[in-house]
Image (tube, rainbow, N blue to C red):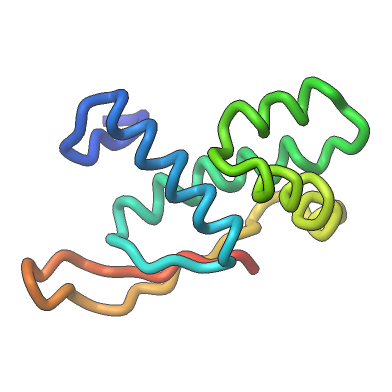
Length: 114
């Protein structure tokens, strides 16, 4: 089935969780989560970085500020992360599988900015 993964949550909860995870990834550079969540976070993170690459565009800045939950992270995305990937066409993140989680054997992964 194409489209987004539901991740066992209502649409509002899922959207809030993804916003928080994308913000955390942009703030810290890497996070550890399940593989399916990492794939969803990758999708949204790549979209945000692509938008951030449009320098001096007010609409792009407003899109970023409306999605990223921390103002400091949004500024970092616009001022540092966007220009860093200016010459790169996609592929800003890497997902590394690290094996099953101890409690429920969910497949875990580290997602990081390249």
